[in-house]
Amino acid sequence: MSYYLPETVDCNGELFEIFITKEQLEARLLLLGKTLDKKFDGKKPIFIGVLNGAFIFLADLMRYVSIPCEVDFMKLSSYGDEKVSSGQVTSLKEIDAKVKNRHVILVEDIIDTGLSMKYLVDKIKGYEPESVSVITLLHKKEATVHDVQVDYVGFEIPNKFVLGYGLDYAQEGRNLGQIYVLKD
Image 1: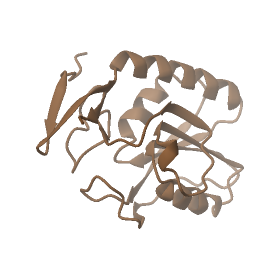
Image 2: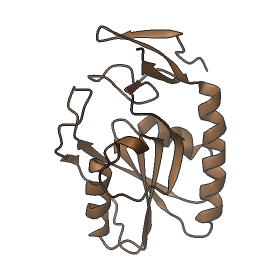
Image 3: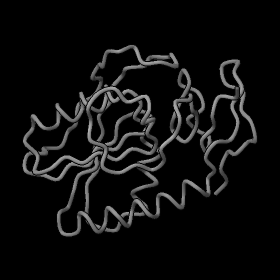
């Protein structure tokens, strides 16, 4: 399989450079998969991916998880086509699965302010699951202002704008096989 891995990317008139390589992503996914296998052994969790950004991360993560599990998706919006959050979360697609008394693992591409994840955790807890865990590929810890428990983190990153591997800029760049950062 061939991945789209350019050295730099021009997206919406801005230049991005490699930040996290395909190899670094794969190594981290392997460790996350093993950790989740151990934690949820015998529990058959349901992974709920947050669309659109988390679809690649979730798909690849599933290839490293060997326990029985299910997958569903929700879609939220707090960015629109901008580089900064609007400060409001809109639910665009609800889950189809019943999660009452289930172990739920919320899968996000990136947590920055924590607004969307706090909204999502509160919403899912209203469905009375057995447990709710949060896994994110990227966490901008210094940007997080909302109280949200992040259980599993792929990479902690600085408060910079990133692109690729499902993350977009005005819906472009999701198809990049690694993660890029806006060049200074």
